[in-house]
Amino acid sequence: MKKITLSLVSIVALSNFAFAGGDISPVVAPIAEVEHKHTVYVGIGYSAMSMDIDHGTYFSDNFTHGAYPLDQTATDIDANALLLLAGYKYNQYIGVEYRYTRSFGDLEVDNEDGSYDVSGTLSNSAIYLKPSYSYENLNLYGLLGCGRVLLSLDTPSDYSETGFQWGLGASYNINDEFSVFVDYTNLYDSEEFDGLYPMQDITVDSINVGIIYSFHNLF
Image (tube, rainbow, N blue to C red):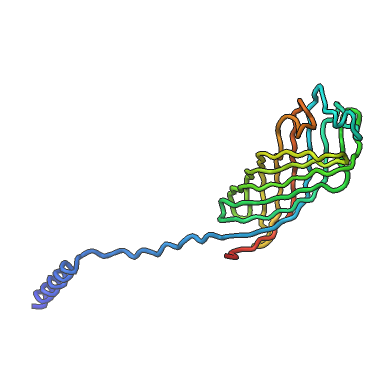
C-alpha cells in the first residue's frame, strides 16, 4: 500500500513539473558594464631637440651673408628644451594631447670644423591623436598629429614650418595620479626649412622624458 501511495505521489509531482513548463532557467550573472575612465592630465619634462641638415651644395643668403657662421658644412643644431603638455584620455585606447616645447640657453651648432654656440630658440607647438595600449602599469602609445616648428635667431626674421608629426613612447604608472614617460617625436622631415636651407634634407626631432599628473573621472 505504501509503495502504491509513493508511486501516486511521484506521478502527481511529475505531472505538476510538466505543466509548469519543465525547463529550469539557468542563473545568469549580470554583465558588468565597462566603465570608461575619462582622464585629464598635465605634464612637464625635458626635451633634447635636434635639427639635422644633410650636406648640400648651396645655402641661402640668410646665412652666407648673415650674422651667424652657419656655413655649408653645418650638420645639426642641438637644443635643451622645456616640454609642457596637457591631454584628455577618453579610455585606455585613445586620447588627444597638446604639447609645447621651447629651448632654453644657446643653440649648439655642430659641423665638420667643430661646435659653437649661437643665440636663439628652437620651439614646437603641436596637437596629437594618442592611441595607446596598457598592460598592468606599463602604457605604450603613439602620437599622430600636426605641429609648427619655429627657429628664432637674432636676425630680422623667424623661420617656421607646419606639418605632420608623429611619435612613439612608453609611460609607467607610479600610482593612480603620477606616471613617468619617455618618447621620441619626429617634428619635421622635408627639404629646406622656410627658405632657410634650400636643397637640403632637414629633420627636426626630439627625445623627451618627464612626469605626468592625472585627474580621473572629472566628468
